Length: 481
Image (cartoon, rainbow, N blue to C red; front, side):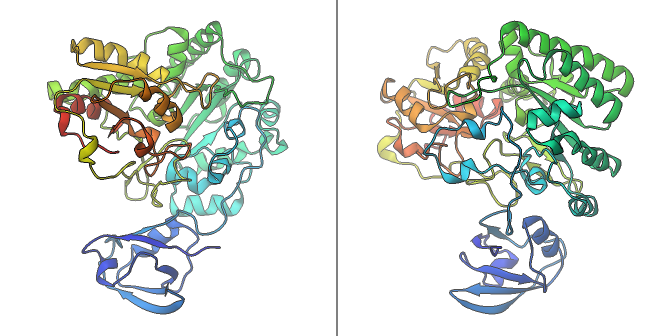
């Protein structure tokens, strides 16, 4: 078990007044040794804390004077201070198994930890969930959680997870729902495995057995060129069409029975099927925005806001996608795939992804043409929006994801290597806008940084509102190099 290590202290905060410093380790808090940042936050909600601190090998006591509920003001290095609950499933479709060799060690860690589900929106299969975990979740109201369902048929689910506990672990989902914990589900659809009749059976199982689920995202399998599973392949167009139609059919039934749609198809399905995205109202609040469900529609709605000034038909959603904790209604922003392992704040809140200083020597010229960097799918979504601007100084710069290969086309999985190759063929002196979802702590998944790119880039939040404002404000956006 490691100790909570302070990495930053907010000016004027209780931690600063008590002279806590970066590098300090919290040995105990009011006599207790916290297991994770969730427990630490609960303990620090109290007034006038007593901290046992280790600094430079010396231990001493610090009295922190603060009001009850006042934030401590200390940022920690990690979210968990004990062991991460790792995943013991061996799913054919697991993306961690499809990573190329030589990446950062932390990216290969498979977790199945309910605490990371609460903090970052990671999906858990519940195969390692216990009575003690349930007691803590219910007692501390760690809600919402995110659960990988994949199939409600026990045998199909056990085969997909390659774990016999997959056949029984959804009993914990029933227990969580019975306790009033909000849960969002996910079904990763693998062609020939859990599509077709099995997908219909799964959605029927949701209605029959888990109707309290807040939502269920139905997403297509992603297959990188590093996959070694011969049975795993991308969807054909007809399979994508069938999946979209299945979701729409079950949405109607869910709505008649429960008054809400419950199940939602990922944006990628509509792109693969060549179908238009549903209206904003059909996403019922965009609860699964971070998982690529409704992201395209929400981006289009937000795109018009800086111009019209009218309120959105959708909620104001941060690029990480919001989820609401039952504990005081505090928003917990989700950071996306790999977010927790590198660069994400310990508390689970989304921090600026690529903070940095402007390098005047690499600044683009005012009024220079603008290139918007995006993935293959992003280009299909942004294309009509950019064309409608009627501006000849704005263009899309699609980046082919050769690093992962396969059918990986989402912008959030672009890496420095592919961006550098693409930018090397682009003109100098232009402005290049880079969505921040490509970065975690200012670093791409392949370990490169914006400073390694051959052209300067401006890192922009990956939502329609921010992108449109960056285009309108032109040179006023911060350049990160």
